[in-house]
Image 1: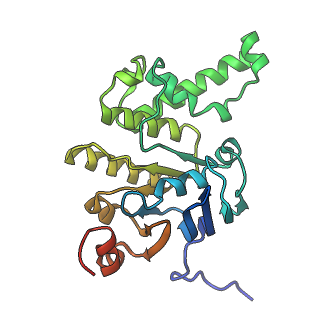
Image 2: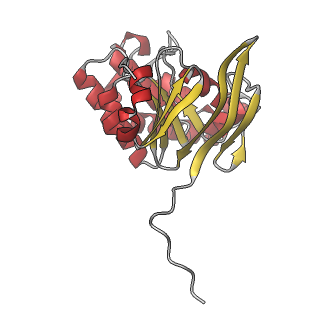
Length: 266
């Protein structure tokens, strides 16, 4: 008997799922029993008013804080309770709300940092400067250069100190650094903050290009015009709990979301 044809209406399997995610800081419950899932290949928006707990969710997903309760799964494996390095090795990378670049490093060095887990040479081989180590170094530099082109900076900035670039270009360095680890899911924490309309549109196009490379994206963003145009699905937080989840147009039209996030009366 032949196999049944694929169902075009079947949901795309989740690359990331949180069930009952709870984060506490002392007696404060910052995230309370949160359920949400990011479909593989999707751009998923995580939005909410300031203080809703969005960055805390990213910190829990990436091992920067330990959940008090709940289940986290990524690419079919449990990641709840794992440390930052172990989660990164599984293919989860992020950028930060406040740009975090090493002050004395060049752009090239900053991007290369993101590829440390995949560097194909042992510490001893590096010390001995073996042929294998030299080949691995050349491959890493070539990969970093390709990513600088991809994020729109170009290789001509490779030798500049990263922190001397404009704010928007530093954001692009952060994205290139995150992509250097060849992630399956990229978490972006307000990548458009502080940018003008042209810069926002360019970064939105870059996020689409990241997804086109097969990388799923979880995006925190406050610009609702960008969110509406960019995201396949939205999850809305309020006081650490899920307020709404679903299609962006339906979510943004929800009176409860408008009251909580957009400041309109219920």
